Image (cartoon, rainbow, N blue to C red; front, side):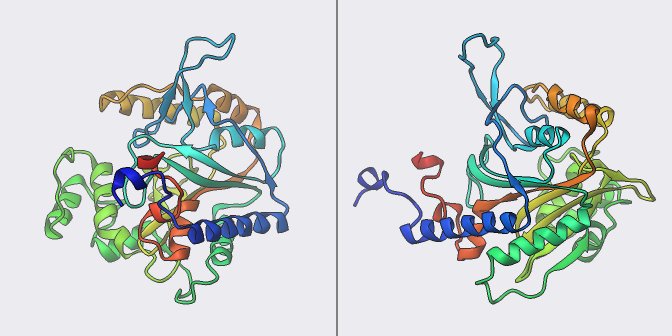
Length: 329
């Protein structure tokens, strides 16, 4: 059978899709037992992601009365969910499709399914406990897994890259990359964050989550994204990521609640985008007004459900666990 006559078929087997549905039901049961409210928020937004590493799809708006300004397919439901939190929703979760341009490959698809949830009154350590409980529940058939572990960002770099990421200079990072034979093509000489990300990807992440759930936590302050920064020497972002089999599954934060600081971060992101020749993206003023009105102390996490299904079923490609990836959409 040629590709032309078979490309209408799903890339995932019907058995895999049935197992996926069972795992999604297991997720909803988990939150129902804990009294966390399921919500829905818009996929189209007046604001896109300002993060220089994320690229929003732009959709022309044709709704009656709409201004000519574009709308963006969300890369995450985070901003709208935080508006619900500020309005008094209490702890909430959402399972939704999200869209990120330019993301394709064995572990990526431009359109994918995200589980995002926020726990009012939880710190990020308590949220790690809950992420561990959820992942353990969903992966209960994986009998090969050892006990979960937690490793600080600093300790992981010392262990696998041989340097302290909070103290290293760009020259230190470059020397470590050279010592391990890591290609450094295209890395700006003075950009310490870019060097650190390179070593994280090539030297640290491959060792994380080997036959166990591994949490990497307490990131450098300049990698805070939307996390709160804890003062100290050095200051650290109260952020964590979850790995299994070398695959990043989740990204969580002790959420920033300061509207002025959030505005400054948006502006810094937009400046970085301009410096790298990326399209400028309007930031979310409604989110900033919600933060100013009062976001309750909370922690939140985004978990890639397609990847979780991959590791649950032992699949090697995301195409094995979704019906129609981008090439067949």
